[in-house]
Length: 413
Image 1 (cartoon, rainbow, N blue to C red):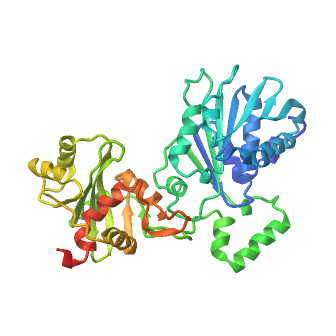
Image 2 (cartoon, rainbow, N blue to C red; image 1 turned 180 degrees about the horizontal axis):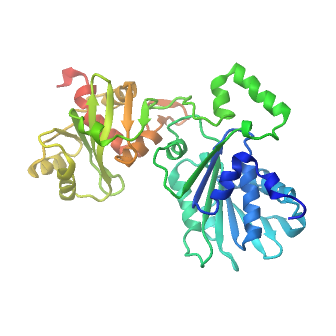
């Protein structure tokens, strides 16, 4: 690569990232503004394609943002490595072709999924997927759709897939990206890397001064923008969530068990949840869950009997009295929720005012996902309503039912 020493181009903070590329499936680069994360991903992508014949796909949520961001970043990397003469640049459609092998970097927007699904490469497989600005994606499912378009084929011997995500963490701790990659349970084949402008000696003096000015005037905003921290600012339904492991000994102390059930079958899943409520700590702890689609009442009964606490009331959605009667006939201690006017808003408010809602991702993954991802409903003008969205909230509804006796005014009973 010319007379350039590659070692000089990799900042000390990114040496570990450079090495992790070869033995991890997923590399997650997160951090603040001017942290050099995208620069190093670009350098490593160019280097990898020149080292071994393979193709790459670079994706952003919206296609028309590619040219002024990652495309320019990769051109910079090619120039920096002094190999410009070895690459062919195309701007319509965007692509970068390595002349000696004809390997190609392809660029697509996730807003046109058919263009991703239809990608075919002739000589070499697509093995590198770089999704830039991961936090722009509304949920994990939309990212998985992109991944599956790339990971669908078995690779020839000697090849491996590499998926790279880069993003500035959103300020809301409950955002799905923060939940997933700030979690205590990261898969072994994932490498998480966090960097800030303080790790980048090439940041201009003006940019550094701008960051320090913000640090003095607005420390919270500085932490979010420049340090890449999820500061928890913004209006979120449950700012009291605590995601952490619940150990066996702690779990064994849970004695005030509350059980709730939200019916569903085809599209909407059924959700059975089990919580411990500590009145002294004003805290609830997620214990167990059953969540799934196309689970009939008999199968649900079988699964519930394996985990429910005997002689402990199950409070279920009263909109399905026939299902409640069937579960009673299957020897479950169950009754319908009272659901007086305003009970939804009241129950959601009660949950939000608890000191803590403690959830272990490993024990109750769907509870963790739905409580973390839920947002307020909006009206047709985009203004927030005083209640949660009525979608992907099955475990939340079941939780309200489980704790109904605590959160609905006593006069109802």
